[in-house]
Image 1 (cartoon, rainbow, N blue to C red):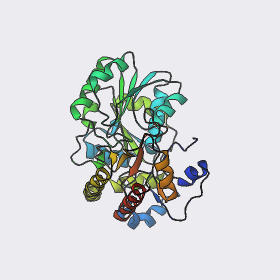
Image 2: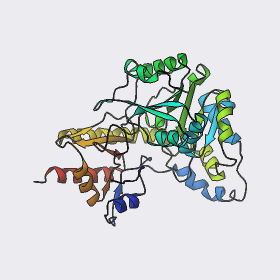
Image 3: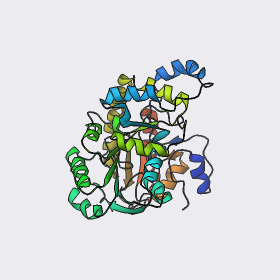
Length: 358
């Protein structure tokens, strides 16, 4: 099947399958905060409008200063990007022609960007259904590798890897002169997450990517940042086009970082909905990954593959994310975002309908 490689934009998914997009549907394929953007952003929107006639700051100084203060790192350890996707592209341009290992399943953009920059890509496949990460099993893949892509918490499984395991991998990669690109795009959906950003002062091989679009519900603005030692930031920033981040995104980023209560409110909401959804799934013979964030993978444990369930859901206006382009998954799971209470209840209702089919 020639399916879209990302979630969201459901019209393209239905078109690829020769289906008509229902008049009413719920898009579970995009992992965005179901509470939407912080209310403060709407309050300030008219003020932001006045700034669209002004060129954006190419150095993003105000936003960098706010992140540096929040994370207790130097300003020259930060690079602001037009979403995580731009940062991944910049890193892979820096790694052009190198041997890169991707821990799978993981965000498909890593491989795509690596291939576009003539990198040699090798997979390290985690075993389902637990998708446990082990340094001992990873070691053979690291032989002669120049870089490792690791997403934590993982997309698409939603699983958080143990701090001790990730740290041991960073240490081993340092010994082998191998960069570690640690994608923390969903870190702020975790309660009491132990950040790896302080370790950029210890490990010169560590690069951390963070998205601001997921938690703050602003994917249309495109905003993220990278943290690494100043020497690495200086090298990678050479590949970034001038003015790649627009003025509104920069202003929105500064405002969003002031909304700590909004982040906590989101974390509580996501946790409560997971506690409501997951027992229902297990009771009705749906296997679900042990996600700790705002999305999860699910499959009907009575089926070997999920195409019939996928198509049934689409016909009912429930749009999950397929996993055909995640190496090692090949469509055997479906990924769902946690949405509003009403929308999550609708999903449960439709899954019950599926389970009751003859």
